[in-house]
Image (cartoon, rainbow, N blue to C red; front, side, top):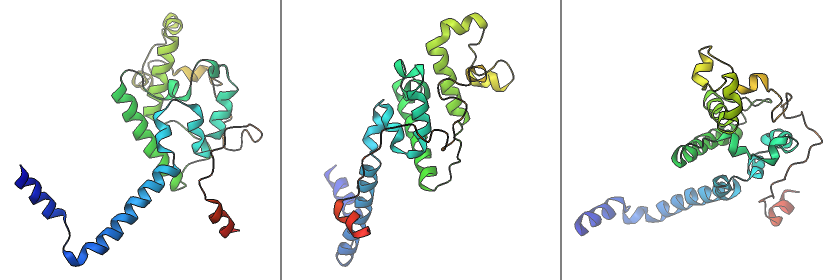
Length: 195
């Protein structure tokens, strides 16, 4: 076992003349990764705190409309937009969706009006039924997203369009609404230098 460990260490150790450049490059990658982890507040995404969703300013409208809805009293963002059938699916979905959001936000490829993709629609439909299933069973509305896409039923929000975000959801829809503002991570010396 010790021999195998020594072989692995010898394999990954750079030659003597490359040690300094390798340490510098590894430091750059490590520093960039830690900086991205800190500035994105990556640890906050493990919580169910709604203010986390406005870490990206493009979610401001969704936060403001939720905050003025009746759902605010009973449900957080994750109650509707994350699976709740098991913990592995919950965090896999959060990680997958979060990485997609971070990518399109970083590359500035998001649209003015945010629309849910099919996996997100499926989760929201599941959670509507999870909370309101005793009411929707009476109207035979407890169907999943695949049934709906095959024409066998409707999504809950096909009728309840205003719940909880209203019908107008573009970035400019709530110009005077207030949402938590993430604190800046720019050091004071850098702000002064930029001015």
